[in-house]
Length: 139
Picture (spheres, one colour):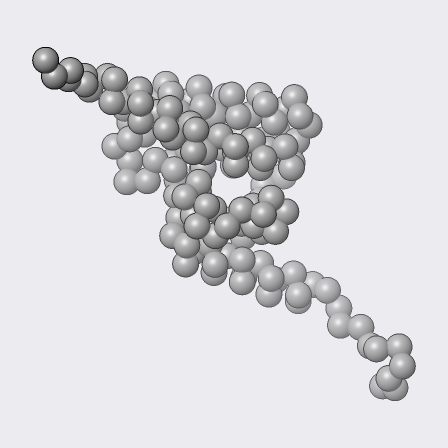
């Protein structure tokens, strides 16, 4: 006899797959910006929100983008600092050492968008750092 899977079981399985895929990066992001306790609270609240709205989340064109947008706002409220997508991409890539593909997956964007954000961030940062003269060269 063949066992059938109910729609509820599929939704539950899909949620846990989403959780398992996203939770480590979400926690690392929060831990880089918050105290360990606050990071745990932020992650827990986000996944409670996602679970409570899961049937809506999975109908969104990008469930990852839906969750990431709300998560970044929640972390910003806790830190008192709103970050740009380029700052977030920079943190995820250069500090947390996530690949461009992984960042695209957890934020619900395209890899090309992540690459563009990183390039933009690098250019923006380079403009803010004044050029220094080499100590042995004359002006």
